[in-house]
Image (cartoon, rainbow, N blue to C red; front, top):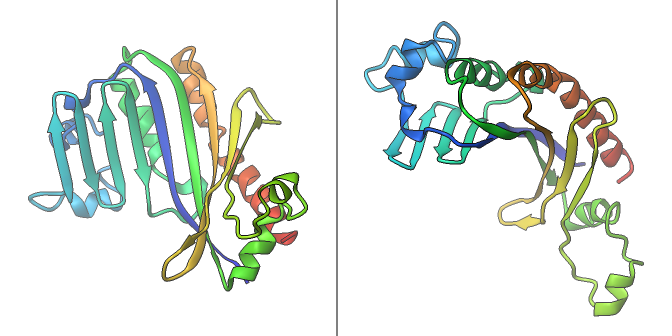
Amino acid sequence: MVDVKRHSINLVAIGRQNPQIINTDWLKAYKIVPLDEPPFKELFAKKEPFSKFVSTPVFTNLALGPIEFIVDQERFQITDTAINEWRDTCIIQISEKYFSVLCHTPIRIVGINMVVKLTFSNPEEDSIFQELFFPKESPVFKAIANQNINASAALRYSYPNGDGRLILGIGELRRKEKIERMVNLNYEFDFTDWAKFKSELSQIPKVGEYWDGILSKLLRNS
């Protein structure tokens, strides 16, 4: 049976950023992160709350437990790797607060990526899953005359319940200690103003439910 585990969720904002503004003192002073909630309550009680902090004029990487910021001159990214339910992540709240303070940041595109790890019991189980998007009867298999193919896929289409765009990504099979694939759904929208920014982010729990439904159907048919 396939083991399904939510791996991470991240938010990316493409535009012109200011990497060096991020540090723990700034986050604390402007209450960007919820200081009275875990993991930040416990982390900020320490002398050094971060497990990683690299800052240069063009790049900053700050890790606070499972929450990680990576910012360069064109890209803001925040990731949560301690995710149980998509709706429970704090990164949406943090991103809203971050950009409410930095409201003059020019943003063009925003994307939210929800990553799931699938672990298969055996190679045959993955082979059945792969046939959902790359059947063995495919002309590609026949053209290259090789059945030992490790396929990946990216499907781009419009979100059925709104204005956003979706990318359904199915990663390559990884064979190390376990047989596993990363699959993800990326919800992307064009930035027009901060009202739309907040409105789109409020839809993320529904997008998460949509993603869970798609994944359930895929696994039911494999």
